[in-house]
Amino acid sequence: MNTILMSILGIQFLSIPLSILVYIDPGTGSIILQALVATVVGIAIAVKLFWHRLLKFFGLRKGSPADPISNQDDLPKKS
Amino acid sequence: MQQTIHQSSFRDPSGFLFFKKGKLLRQVNTCYQKDYGFLMNSGLYEKLCKEKLLVRHNELENHNGLNDSIFKVIAPELVSFISYPYEWSFGQLKDAALATLEIQKIALQHGMTLKDASAFNIQFHKGKPIFIDTLSFEKYQDGKPWEAYKQFCQHFLSPLALMSYTDIRLNQLLKLYMDGIPLDLTSSLLPFKTKMKFLLLMHIHLHARSQKKYESKGTASKNIKIKLSNLTALVESLSYMVRKLRLKNQGTEWGEYYSFTNYNDRSFTHKKEIIAGFLKEIHPATLWDLGANTGEFTRIAAQQGANCMAFDIDPLAVESNYNDIKKNNIENILPLVMDLTNPSPAIGWNNKERLSMTKRPHPDAILALALIHHLAISNNLPLARIAKFLSKLSRHLIIEFVPKTDTQVKKLLESRKDIFEEYDELHFEKEFSSFFEISAKEKILESERFVYLLKSKDKKFNFAGTTTH
Image (cartoon, rainbow over all chains, first blue to last red; front, side, top):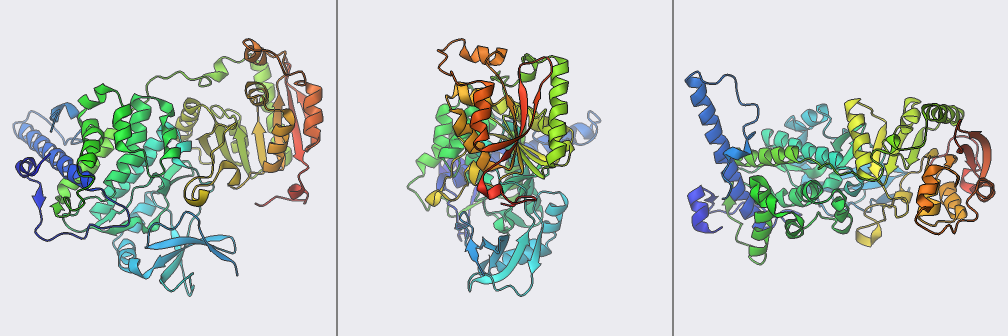
């Protein structure tokens, strides 16, 4: 997990730091990992919604997905 | 006027809990004024209360609080019994986790976020998990990561994954690790196959590695920004993962107890009748069922209106009890995992943050059915010690004596030397009479067992009327 990987995944870095200091320690490694996971699942959900809309557009599927991440097999196995 | 700060309320500078004349109140400090205002005015408080996810509170006018930091004093609605995550079954912990995530999801929709995600902020109230810390919300800043993510993973994901994939008993690690099970420990205890599951790989295994990699690089994450849609996706992914976690089919000792007793239908019905009759005589407002199994007999007291705790050592029995309570919307039974030979200790700072089992509010009555032989024979406890222990907990005791001729006791003695010469009806009555008055005694039809209704002789119960603790 390095800066290049994060840049590829679109994880953004601010020039001005947010006031992230709270009364519990959020953990540096936890924040970095969180940013990575949030981006991956965020992309996965966006792709799934797009795919669903595409199928719907062509009349191949009806309704809306009840759970946007209901099938984990659709997600990549590794980051 | 006696006012004392709650022993577990010191971490968050936003405020604290304190007792005034025995009533539990919460001081909100001036540093939390803005966030408190946002919580109350954004619609979040009402929404969460309506969904029964957050305890309601009343604002007290003209209260001076405990110190100069005061902005406001609020009186929260109280839950009937404080329980801890290491006393919950798998399903209870799972529902507590899902409630926390649902709260975070709703908070984000209202422009706020949870600044902590401690399992100790959840209590079971009227059969359902509810969030009890009103001061855990802060205004969401655009791009800000979820600071409580690590805590959520340690407090909820770790024990749930371990219970699901390794062993149901591993939630007991929460007794050792008050701020949740460290992720590197969880990662090392989980089987290899969990690395093949995408969300477990990310939230546990890679999370643990990331923590190790950046443990001495405190500033590396300072400028990280996460889009709100991605943050919501993260919460969704956690929620999805928790919902997917299941208990393996683990056969424990007592989970199917009722199928394997030597009761016949007539004895079982008669036992229920005896207990219902005894309970009608004493009308307890609160009751502890010790060794409750799946809560078959607890329900008799609950149906008569008592607020009941159903303790059992077997996590699967507690799970089964909880599932039934959920299914039937029973509000006045709380099943909890408890080993009576080693009840929950007092833990945390100064051994006062989390209360031991015996320091929590005592009930009006105790049910101890088919329990005595497990304590006296399996655990070698002298009858006098059992009697003394129980006499201090409650005014009334309904206890079943199971003699050596009973097949359940025979089974316990099969593989060991019988050193229990004094384990019989006569000695039971003699020892218990030192601590209790025998109000009634009934033999269960077509069995060797007796059920007693006893009244404690302990000096604190010498007053007439209902006892308060």
